[in-house]
Image (tube, rainbow, N blue to C red; front, side, top):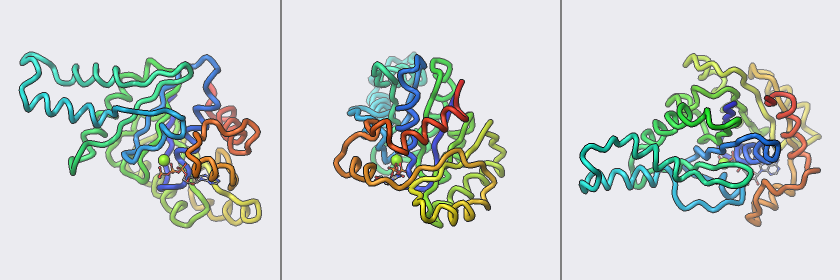
Length: 251
Ligand SMILES: Nc1ncnc2c1ncn2[C@@H]1O[C@H](COP(=O)(O)OP(=O)(O)OP(=O)(O)O)[C@@H](O)[C@H]1O
Ligand SMILES: [Mg+2]
């Protein structure tokens, strides 16, 4: 099952992605986490240090090609595939791949093309692939998430967060990208304004998979650089994401 987490910047994509991994790990499932945000922050949320991203690998390969360091009969895709497999960080509970970004002003689309190919080729090695996507809509227009099974669209109560969620829903429809399932996740909700938010998101034609409340502990973890995956089991956010898995993402 390929699950992607999308939404406007800062709405809680990385929080939700890391808590999905937290709840699925330890259940005997093979998990691959993919950080597809060029401004990568999933590794910190998972408490993992990353030295080499797919973007770095692509740069290395470009240099090697320019300098004629590759055997002339070498298939570049094979080398890239091999190097990408090699750069997957393995932990006892899940694997992690960080897309990163190419150096300089290079177009990010090359990394996006690689990501689409990775999703196609290595997905069969895992029970769950969880993708923390780039903020906004580009993953749709570039079709990097076209083979995703479940799209979780995260929004906070802000008007712009809700607008981006609505656009994600509409654009996937326009582009004819049909996820098997697509749900909304409400984040940073305060109990006193929950009913107002529920009213506002009615314009988005998506079911709400879960609601995460505003939680000072999450803010503190981020402020201290403490991995979000270490949030306590009894945190409402952890419980809410576990419930989303139980209700919608079990296999
Ligand atoms: N439920 C919550 N309660 C309190 N703070 C939260 C909550 N969810 C997220 N935050 C805070 O909001 C910020 C953004 O969260 P997060 O990094 O998960 O969002 P994101 O969508 O991945 O952002 P980006 O687009 O920058 O990658 C974090 O600093 C986090 O502390
Ligand atoms: Mg993030």
